[in-house]
Image 1 (cartoon, helix red, strand yellow):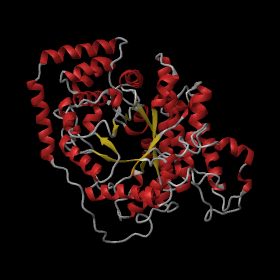
Image 2 (image 1 turned 135 degrees about the horizontal axis):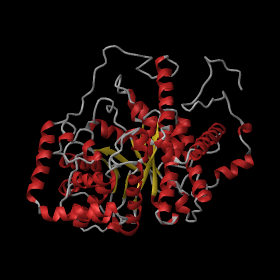
Image 3 (image 1 turned 120 degrees about the vertical axis):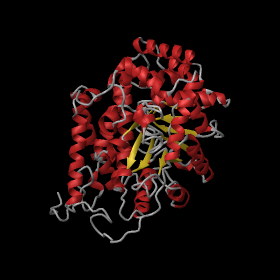
Image 4 (image 1 turned 90 degrees about the horizontal axis):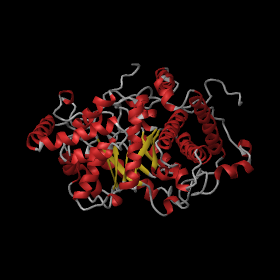
Length: 531
C-alpha cells in the first residue's frame, strides 16, 4: 500500500488500485516470459499474429444502418469511397425482434436505430452493387441472426459469389441479450440450438464466415466494469463451446471461426490490459479446458467499438477526443477490426460529417501515430503487465463463481450476472454524481449555452414506404409455396434437423423474417424475464 488517502487514491473502473509508480518488482521476470510468449504464439498475450499491423492494419469499419435498405446502401457506398475496409450493418428493432415492417408492433420503430430488413427483396436492395467477394461484412444481429445470414448467402449466390467466398461475422450472441441488451425472442435453450445449428451450417456452406461474435460490448454498455466485461464474455464463450460439443461438433471444427466483440472506454491502460488478459485467458481455456489442438481455436480474435455510453450530449465535440483515446487503446491492445463512434451519437444517428471524422480518426492512428510500427508496443511496461495480471486474476475469480453456479446459462437464468452489472452501474453513477469520477463537460468544466450540432434526420416517409413494400410482397408471392416451406420449418423445430436448412428454403420462397420468427415462436415460446 502507498499510504495514499482518499483524495489522492487512484482506482480503475474495476476498482483496481493504481500505485503512484511501478518498477521491476511489479512482477517476476521469469514468470513474465511465460505469460507474454511471442506474438502469434500461445498464449497470444502479445497478439494473434506474429507481425500484427506491420503486415496489415486492423479492418476499419463504421457501423451504419437506418431507414430503408436503399438509404443504408447509399451510406455503405459513401463509407467505402472514404476508405473504409469492411462493412458493419445495424438493424432496426423490429428486425432484431423478429417482426416485419408492416407488423403493428413495428410501428414507429421501422428504420430508426438501424436498417429494416424483412425479406430477401430487402437484402437485395441493401447489398446492391457491393463487392461481396471483396469486403467482409459484420452484422449486429442476435435472435434473428440465422435468418439475416441466410438472406446474405442467398443474395451472394444471386450475385455469383459462392458461400466459400463470403466473409464476415454475425453477432449471434444471444446470451448477452438476456444479461444486458434485451433483444431476445425465444428462451435461452432453444436459442442456443439456433446458435449451434448455425455453427454446423456454416462449417459446411460458409467456411470463412465467423459464426458468432461473443460480445462484451453490450455488457460494458449496461454498466459493467472492465473485469466483468472480460469475465462474463468469456463465460458466455465457454457456454457456446460446451453447447456445440454437446450437439456433436468437435472443438477444432468450429472454434477457429469464433470471434469476440469488446468495448473500449477511456482508461487507456486498463483497456489495453483488458484486451491482453482476455486473449491470454481464452487461449488457456480452449487448450486446457476443451483440449483444442488447432492453434486457431485458441486465438481470441476480436472487433472493438468505442464506448457509446461514454459519449456525452453536453459539449459533444469532446467526444472526438474520447473516441481517439479509446481507438488508441484498441490498437495498442491488438484488435482485428475497429469501429469508431461519431461524436454526435449521444444525440442521434451519426451524420455523414461525424461518420467521416470517426473514420479519419482511425486512419490517422493507423498511418500517422506509429502505433502500427511494432507489435504490442506497451508490452513489458511495469504498470501494464501488473495491470494485465490483476485483471486476469479478478476475471478468473468471476469465472470460478459462474462455474460454481452451473455455468453461464444457469447464472443468467438465476439473475446473477445481471445483478453484478447493476451493482457496478449504480456505483459508477454514484461516483459521477458525487464528483469522484470526472466527466468533462458534465460534472466539471461545464459551459452554459452549448450550441447543439446538426442531428441526423429520420424520415417517417421511409418507414411508411418500407411497411407498404412488405405488404405488397406478401400479396404478390406464391403463398402456397411459402406455406409449405414454413410447415417444414415448424417440423424441423419440433424435431432435430438443422433449422437453417428449411429456413433457407422458406426465405428463398419469399417467406419473411417475421413469418419465420412466428413459426419458431409457436414451437419454442417467448422469453419472459423472471417468468
